[in-house]
Image 1: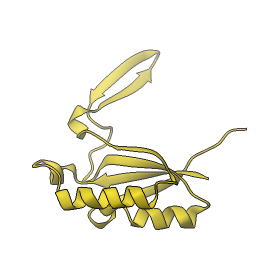
Image 2: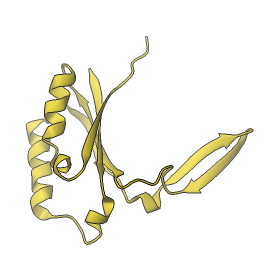
Image 3: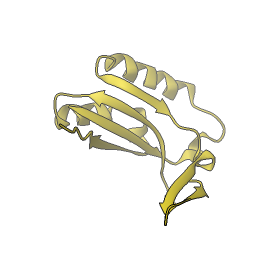
Image 4: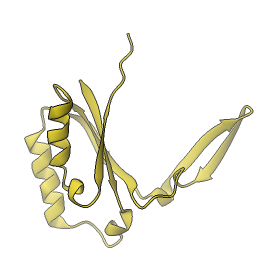
Amino acid sequence: MKYLLLIYENEKRFEKGYDKAELAEYGVFGKEFASAIQGGNALKPTSTATTVRVREGKRLTTDGPFAETKEQLTGFYLIDASDLDQALVMAEKIPAARTGSIEVRPIMTFA
């Protein structure tokens, strides 16, 4: 079953760059779960985001994310896991789980 592991952190933590030791931990994570990881990326700061809505047939755009929160979506992994328990084991090993949170969402499949 496919799951999306959504990484939420306070992006201000990265204003001065990324910690090399933590980046190395992500490398270890990637190697450990290479067979399960189907994709993933870090995201640019929310200041670069644009939110799109369509109302009455017209596109409306807003700078930034939809909601103001203390934690922002900073990255994701798309994984293939045998079940939720295996996905949770993987999620807890993402370094950001120590400073932020990891949302685990099953991918919906259509017949």
